[in-house]
Length: 406
Ligand SMILES: Cc1cc2nc3c(=O)[nH]c(=O)nc-3n(C[C@H](O)[C@H](O)[C@H](O)COP(=O)(O)O)c2cc1C
Image (cartoon, rainbow, N blue to C red):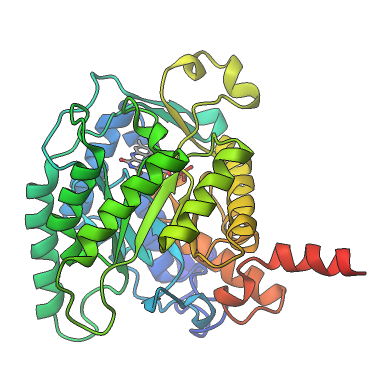
């Protein structure tokens, strides 16, 4: 009887064949995702920070659904020699203290970026420090790197890797782990802070991020300047390369996460340093300190902090597009900022992203967002004749070049 009722609602017993864009649609597994997201409006009766804590607790208690439907083959992608089951990741800030990596991967994310993790524990800014703008699909936060510190994170990352290594083949969720590093507010030596993060956490990371773009730590974003970035990257790279790396993949790639609020000159400088110093990739972008369009008129828009979500999409995608051009497509870029659909993810990929992350849309929509974005992305790739994500990376630039050549 239940099955008949569910069929009437449009759920089918089995999804489409694996490997096609039809997977994830209205099967019984999808019902699990839809139900898990149904509590969203209730959870949002609480303030942002409490809702987030409830989300983390739910994930820890095993309440999140587990994706068992295979990702379409076209979503599998290899970046830095590392294989991602799909290109959709959780952006930094959701799992700041590396508490729920496994349940996030089990939801079907292709990777999880934990952090930002500071060397020493610190409380961050006074509360309240995060605000919703629901009618704009946006969030403003000024957390200021609240972090339990590298020691706590190290223990959790080690436990995660141990469990992963001990799991029988196929019984642990696929997907990779990025570790995003921050600096302590009161530290005067940024390079030493990021190097401490590398020393303590790099052994567990599939990639590392130097986050120098959060707007809520005084002076942090000035590290994006040419000279400062050069000095910082040299020093952090030296730390990483001085460590022992067993295995065929070598050390984890080192990425730099940048702000969307950069001038053309800033972007040129960052691209030049990235190429000259051998940075392995960029994350574009963090939150913006600007208040585009109607956000400026919203009373909540007046709160200090970084704006994320839908209003960030366009500016973050344009910075991504420019960074792809300035680096000649040589550096893999993780595109982030305002992604809430497969169409958005696809636009980031066409603008030059090899991987895509999101946060705010996940906070609003919950677990069901994950299969939806992947299904829509697979459908768009198929529609445009791309057999893989990699084939579509930077496609807009090739179209533009072909038009110019005519
Ligand atoms: C509440 C909140 C906390 C965040 N904390 C971090 C952080 O600690 N480190 C970081 O690099 N980015 C952080 N971010 C930025 C996100 O990783 C991402 O770059 C940004 O939110 C844009 O993506 P979105 O529009 O999908 O949310 C945070 C974002 C939000 C909303």
